[in-house]
Image 1 (tube, one colour):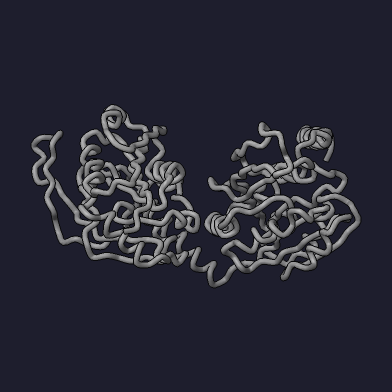
Image 2 (cartoon, rainbow, N blue to C red):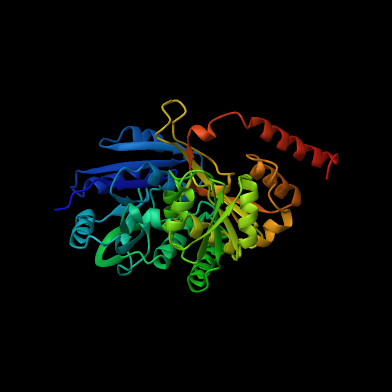
Length: 448
C-alpha cells in the first residue's frame, strides 16, 4: 500500500486534560511513517510539560497566543509529509482513519482531499472536572473539519494557508476556498473523527463568532464573482539585457491561476537578444525605447495599459503561484485598499559564488514585483520619476504614502527576487539617499 510520510498537525491551547489521549489516537492508527507536530498556542497550563513526556516522532513548537489559524499555518510550514492531516488537541481520531485515506489516495492519483464523517461526543459525567466522561450523541454526520480530513500537501499551494485574521470560522473560510478552487475530493461514510464537545471548546470563546462566519461566506461570494467577471490586469515587465531571465519571468505570469491579463514588455534599449526573445513569446505586447531607465519604461507601459489593475514584474524576478488571484481577491474584499503587496523570498543566481550573500531569506515585499495597484490609485500619485535609474520605485512609493493611499500586505510569498551581480552593487546607493532626502523635504514643505 501507498505509505508516504504523513504529517499530523496538532494545535494545542491549554490542552493538558486531553492532549495525551489525542496523541494516543494517532499512534493507534498503527501507521509508522508519520510525524506529529504540536503547536503550543501560548498555553498557560502544563501542555509543554506533557509534550516533553511524550514518545515518538514528535516536534514541538511554541508561539504566543495567536489563534488556531496561525497555529495550523505554522504546522503546515514545518510539515515534511506528502500527506497533511490535523487533529485538535481535545479530539480523537477513529481507528483506521489514515489507512482508509491512503487507500483512497492510492486508488486515484488525482485525488487531493479525503474527508470522513464526524461523531459528536458530549459530556456524560462531569462530576470530576479533571476526568470528564464522554458519550456519543446524535448520528455521525458530514462536517467540514480539519480533523476529519487528509490532504495532499499541494492543496495548500493551490488554496493557500488559513486566514490568520479570522479568530473563528477560519476552517469554514478555508474549506469554502477548497470548493471555490475546485479541489478534487471524496467523502467517505466512515467515522474519521470524534469531536469532543465541552464547555472549553473554542466555539465558546468568541462572542463575535457569527461576524467571522459572515466574513468567510462574503469572501467566497467575492471569489465566485471573480470567476465570472475577472477584471483585466496589466502586467508590466521592463527589460534591459534580460535574455537570461525573460522567458522564466513571463512563464511565472502565465502560471498564475488568473487568465484575464495582458503582458506588456518594455525593452529599455537592450543590446543583447532581449528583443528577439520577447517577440518570440506569444500573447505579449512589446515596446522598445532608448535606454532611459525602468521608470520611463514603466510609464510608457502604463500609458499603453488597458487594465483596471497594474502589476509589475522585473525581468529578473519571478511571481509565486497564486499571487494575482490572492491579491485581486484581497482588494475585492477590502475596497478601501489601493495597493497590496506581499512577502518576497530572495534567492541567488548561479553566477554568484559568494555563499554568504546567497542565503535565501524572506523579506517584506516593498518592491515592484510584489505590488498590485488600482490604476486609478496609481494615477492619483503620478508617474515614476524618470531621472532616477534605480530609485524610481522607492520615490514613487514614498509619494503614495504622502498622497494617503491605503496599503496592505499579504502574509504569503508573492514574488521571488533574484540576487545577481547587477543588483548587489552599492553603486546606486546615492540615488536612494537623494530619493529619501526629497521625501523628507516634501514632508517639511521645503519642496512640493
